[in-house]
Each structure stands twice: as C-alpha cells, then as structure tokens.
Amino acid sequence: MIIPKTSKLNEKQLQEVEAIASDFECSILEIQGRNRCVYAILGDEGREVMFKRIAGLPFIAKVDMIESPYKLMDRRSGLSDHRVRVGKTEVGKDKPFIIAGPCTIDPANPNFYLESAHALKEAGVDALRGGVWKPRTNPYSFQGDNHSLSIILQAREETGLPIDIEVMDSEQLKLALEAKVDVVQVGTRNAQNYRLLKEIGQLTAGSNTAVLLKRGRHMASPNEFIASAEYIVAEGNPNVMLCPRGTTPPLEGYRNHPDESITPLLKNRTWAPVVVDPSHSVGHADFVPACSLAAIAYGADGLCIESHIQPAKGIGDDPKQAILPQKVKELVGACTEVWKNRYLP
Ligand code: PEP
Ligand code: MN
Image (cartoon, rainbow, N blue to C red; front, side):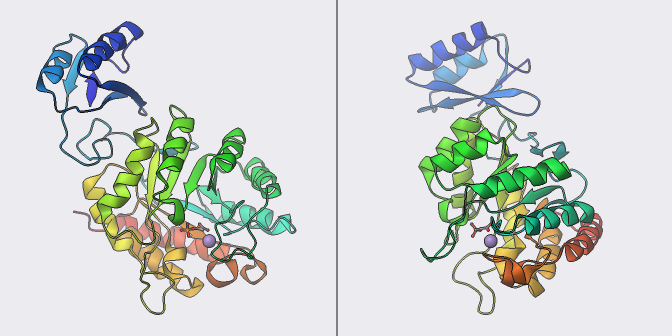
C-alpha cells in the first residue's frame, strides 16, 4: 500500500511508481478514498527492493507492507481513515445509520411502497431499502420486476432519501447504476460470487456508490466475510458496509442464527462500517427490536430493517418480519440512547 505525500499522485508520478512496480511484475491500483488516494500494489508484493525504490521517491509518504489476507480492508491499511458516506450522511458518525423499507416492492401496488417510504422518512431513517429483484429459494415465488425500479426511484424523488437495492447479476447491476442508486446490496447468496463482487468494484470504482455486503448464510469465519469485501475494494471502490444478517444453522425458533455479536470482531479487524440486518437474522417482526438494540450495543454503525406500512399486505418477507414505520421511529430513538451509553472496547 503506497501513501503519497499529496492527496493524489499526478500522472507523471504515477508512471514512475508503475515503472518500478512493473520491473517486479507488479501493477498499481489507484483507490479513491474520501480524502485522498491510496495505491495498492497488485502481484507478489513481498519484494523488498521494490518497496525501497518506491519508498525512496520524493513524493511518497510511506509504503506499508501489510501481512494480512485482506490488506485493503485491514484496520492497519492506508484506508483506515476512510469514511463511507451514503448520500450526505457519513455512516456511523454520531448516531446509528438506519436503512429501512419493505423487503420487496410490489409492482401491482406501488402505493404501499411509496406510503411506507414517506412514513419511514417521518420516522427519521437515513435511507430506503426495497427489493426490485429478489433471490427466492423457491423458483415459483415472485422474482421481482423491472417496473419496481421506477417505484423506488419515485420514492427517492419524493422523500429525498438515498436508496438501496439488491442486484444479483451484471444486467441488474447495470440497470441499478444507470438509475444512480446510492447503495448496491449484495445478498447473502452472492456474498461469495467473486465475479459479481469484482464487477461491482470495477463499475463503481471512483464513484460515490456504496455497497452493502451481506454476510453469507454459511460463512463461519469473520475473515471469509472480510475477504469478500476485499474483492470490491481491490477493484477500486472502498465504500463498503459489512452487513451481518444471520447464518445457518438457525437457532431453533429464529430464521437464522442471529450474528450481531460478530460486530466487535469485524470492527477490530477492519475499518469498514458494520450495518446489521436484524430482520433476516431473527425472521419474526416481534424479535426485530431486541436484535436491533443488541446490534447497536455490540458496536454496529447502523441497521438495515425491513419495514412496511401494512406488513400483512406485503409480499416477500414482509408479512412475517417487517415492522411498522412507527416501530422504526421508536427504535431510532431507543438505538440512539443505546449508542450514547454503549461500552466499546
Ligand atoms: C433482503 O434483504 O431482502 C434479502 C433477500 O436479504 P438476504 O440476502 O440477507 O437474504
Ligand atoms: Mn427480505
């Protein structure tokens, strides 16, 4: 990881660095952080002479060799002071960052989505979620609809809130990026779809688009999760949020094994904000509030909650796990209180 003295290398300086790297069969990747660029060395970077030559250039502040499986996501990396923003809000700055909205947008009843969006704005959330395309276990279940994209865009227009949607393939990614969505969500099923992760990183490199990366359902180790995020950052987009959302096997009675307690481990190993999804973790509306509070107590920077104005009339997960916008409003207040009083390491 190369850190220049200025906020960015000029073309000539970058060429000098690249020339040295190429002598050692390495290449250089520019990563645009919020305040400055850092430069990753791609290839076998364990070459001391290369490090010394680059570090000796007059415009280089330092070159770090990080012994880590995820050298960009690592807390000790040059990105450690990177802050992720969604719209105008810095995630995790001085209060919980709350994303909320229905699981699935019902294209036949756009008003459910739009009314939910307005109620959630009133509840004080920072961003809206809503499934346009859905990964469904059963191939005969509703799979989403392109038309839903225009509904969530309308909600953004009317409320002024940033929007988060899940993409599962290149085609959906391109449509989402054309629509300039603020957050691209990678669902639990694609948490290790490395080609998709790379493509997201490539197509959002240098942009303000954030990525909400959910934890794979089967992922045991925090490192496996962080390595998935590294794929996105290594293509040039450091605006990644890590989203624990429950794993398998489930704790009997819950939908998954609630994993909000992974938060301190992630925060300890990486600089990336952690935004917990309590809805999929527990799978029952009644249990979502406690899981939300626990996540914040564990040090989460935010939450991604399923909420619908009339859960029973929703589709996808909404009838079982969406909470009312009024409940989200209460949680925004309660989570802010926990935030102020929590014990962090
Ligand atoms: C969702 O957010 O509605 C969703 C499908 O989430 P996950 O990928 O965590 O199952
Ligand atoms: Mn859902």
